[in-house]
Picture 1 (cartoon, one colour):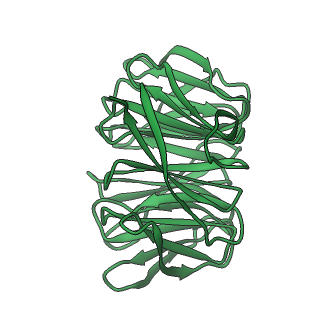
Picture 2: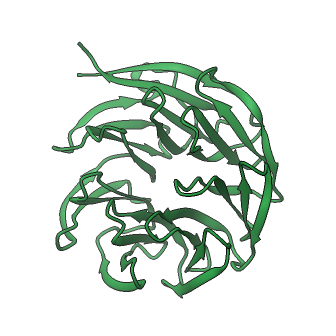
Length: 305
């Protein structure tokens, strides 16, 4: 049985929060959204630390690569800023995309930053000199989300046209196109063991794909509305999904059974509006959730004795 406890409710944002990301520093995390800055918070104190940097437009994507001490900030304008933690300033602005940035990930083995845009394209950047290495058009529709396989051999790209595109990271060649969702793809995540790709969509379905051949293993009616994020517990025993339906759900990672629903209706002090993003932090293995209600909620998720 799963035990859920709300350990902190943190306020400070004045507008909806669209994204949250863990820092390379264990107990630090960042949030951003429709406000004018990226904010740093501490899990030690469950409190505000500082505004890291100002932004000119809404932020949909934050990412802190493991290989370098920077944070990538993707804005609605298409600009990606790279904030350097040692120098405490923006050291580069990547202005190639002309439309909103919806996801940013990185490849540690290649030291590359991968950016997904509303313009339907992906760009890859060198994290040493911040030069653009490659770009390609995935589709004519928005690329909403990126997932990197644990061995970094594959990139999964989820698009507004309901399709998931699997690319080989070595040369960015297209391997396969996955069809099955009936509405735009809004969340993607590879399982830590690399056996499955999980996808979430505006159709509220959670689909499980076998990575051996990318065949469809199962389709679960997981939520009432769009699934906005999928995040695994650091130990990989279960994972969480969040949705526009204001709920967070905890699932068994092996059998994909629903273990717990966290919502106001279930008696929790949960989000009152759409839950937009999750981050599972290793400091206390706490789950961080952010949403349209301008709140940051921190959850202790554990197996009850």
